[in-house]
Image (cartoon, rainbow, N blue to C red; front, top):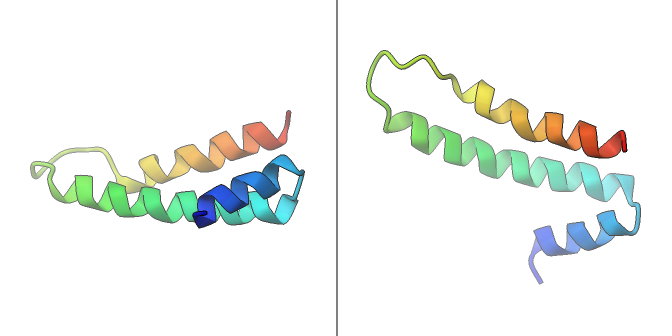
Length: 66
């Protein structure tokens, strides 16, 4: 079972620490993907990697507020 699967299972059991660890795991993967995609962009584009990194944090906050 992958680390993400284990963390998702713990999140379903209302583990706040697991939710934070899952967010960190997803965030690191998103950063890796964003860096890869940004390296392929043409010079002069305006999108910044931090804009892509913000999304999971906002989504996680919304889930926690439910």
